[in-house]
Image (cartoon, rainbow, N blue to C red; front, side, top):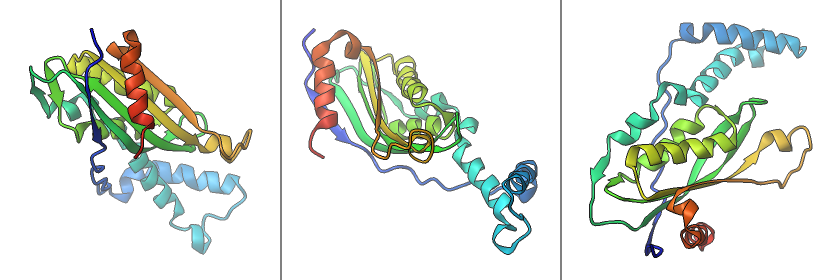
Length: 212
């Protein structure tokens, strides 16, 4: 099979991420925990600057982990369409994301590049950034985040292949530990034609690394 001609599509704007209204009572247990952490650090949680910090932190974590309450398959399942004539590569690149490392609960962030070659179905382009958002808004490691995105698209679309490349900066490597300020982590997942065909992988890499 010859490498398909490629149509590159720039990343659609990220969906608005408005936090859901949550009553203070729903975060009470977490607020108590944050208060204890502040005390353990030697701080006074009752001083002016920290009085509402437990509430704010609890709400922030609720937002940063909102992906647990979302079904990734339902997200893309709303916009899967039959398309028999198009079997060329679709690339959505430069998808900004933010996540939390599960080892230290410190942020890591970067850009995801996602491609697939349709067989019988295509998916609405905005659903690919939404899929990245669902998986990134959980405690994660970059390796698993990469494979979860790829596997979900492969299972739901049954395409000829899926490729995912993520490049990210990890604050657990910058703020602590080795403290390497310029380190960048790259992970990839190649399924189907992206794994079996070198030319397909190379063309995907060319598009990802090309001029923006």
